[in-house]
Image (tube, rainbow, N blue to C red; front, top):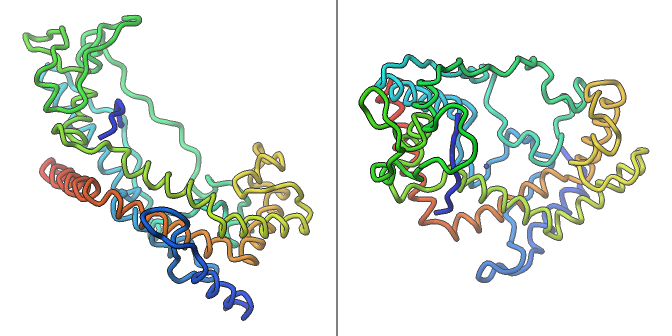
Length: 322
């Protein structure tokens, strides 16, 4: 239920084993953040569930994301109650109960041979496709309190604040039940109390953007570029020509409407087999880790603050019984 309005402040052949060892030691100089970073050990065809990246320490698991969503809705409900409205919000999904979470399952495209053989590219296989729950309807007066604007209002800027600390000085211009409606309504207040209570609150998406930046850099790294060329060449030999990236397979082969069909399963099998032949996940995972380590070091102070604030969110959740 995020309503953030952005403010800047996620046994192998001996030849392959030898190649991995050589690759780990042939990176460019690190220097002061310039050039390609040196790599640590390059594993051979690791399972994505076994990958551990530096930004994981600053990123919520799926269970934690669901839990924080429930906490945010709790805060919104408490705010609405101050104005005499009962609001339960959208029912949150329950976290998966089967095994440990595979955070990086699709980071480098499909990589699990068992899943590929059973489901092709159908990421929803085994999970069902439940309809997205709808928010409960609101009366006109409840809408004002929830959103901080009059129902049917068109255009114009709604008074808002980036943080709860700043919100104390912002007048929404609206009053209900003899009380001022918070800037941006209860929806925004619930978000600010959880994710942006003070002026030094780090943007919720900060860590996601760092992880995305590391991934973008890794895609341009010569070692990943080389591995991708080898993967593409392998795909060519398997009969799937002209595919340069694992992210383009479904679109290039026109599988959007049948991601789990026989054609998709066959393509997925070749895709994963080629990844394993060139050790794409092992190489790319090591490169991704190196770029994340660099960014973690560059942003150590902000990340330390973010980590403290994240821990404070968990304490708030515990105090609310969530």
